[in-house]
Amino acid sequence: VDLFAQIEAGQIVAVMNDAIVRAELDVAGAELTQLAAVLTAERRRLEAEYSDRQMAELDDVRRFQMNEEEARVQYLDMVVEQESNTVELERLRIEMDRNENLVKQQIGQAEDFDDTRLRYEAMKKQIAQNVAAIAAAKEQLDQAALRSDEREGQDTQDAATEDFLSPVRSALD
Image (cartoon, rainbow, N blue to C red; front, side, top):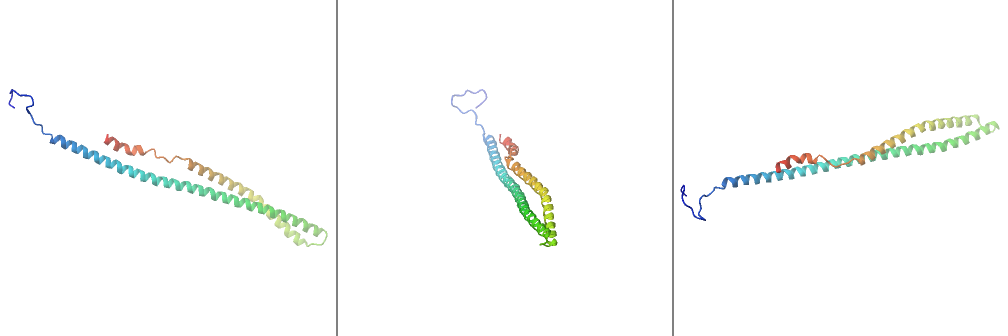
């Protein structure tokens, strides 16, 4: 078309070259595809990291539970031993009383009475010492149970995932 020329309806007056605009759209589409791939890769990495962290936390919970059960077994062993010692102490007391009566009646040996009395006194001391050890074992059991309960109650959700993904999401926007 010449300058100031008369034109008719439907007549082509200009042809625009849209190659640059199409190229810019193609580049933007490629960048979008790349960002979507980065987002997918980041999501998979975070899921794997989260899974690893969950396994580690599960291992921690199991370790705390095992510690609690070991403390419980140790405590119960001590209690059972204490009960056994208490029964033994009573048996020794009866034997000591019997030997004392036999010595008084001049039927038994004084050595037997002394031996029984010494074993009785030793067992009595051991029982007294075990009371403190049992109290300490009970305290350890209570602490292990508390640690185990606290560990199980902790939230394992990863609130920081949004922080990791926000740069990629911003680029996509």
